[in-house]
Length: 116
Length: 113
Image (cartoon, rainbow over all chains, first blue to last red; front, side, top):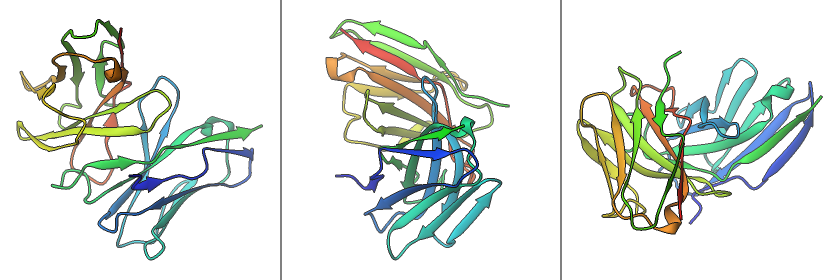
């Protein structure tokens, strides 16, 4: 039962362009969404989060958009840089970290390649 | 920058043996987690731990698994009798209970032969 889906296993983007990574979820109880980046042989690194009361959160080159009615979120990276090449995981939780419902469910990941 | 430390980085064990994976979370964090990633698959939640007890666990976390925070700094995952399908990358994570997500360790690669 895939509660968090990332339908594109991979994505290639030219350096300087926008990278858009998409994520869909099925559990309407999810209240908090996160994006993690992962390099080989390392643990996931937290990138950006958004709670369900917002539809957009921006942090530098990274912006996350949430469309709750469509159960869809996306991560935009502008401009994309070669160092952004990694696997990006969308994740969701029924509560923010530290609450009773902070079990985070990860999507399968999208491998982003930024071509110089 | 504070980090979560996991040891060992790679553990090979025989099927049926007990293994203990160790983690040192960030010192002022209060919430601790174990996740695992089987090769080629997604990162899966195992267990969360707060105030010296398990707060949530997944169906993967059966009676063969246990967690402990024995001394206020280490956070361990024990697998009592390992199976071949336990081979995976195990990630420890900790959180201060803020909106900044978890901090993950670099993982322990467990290989059961």
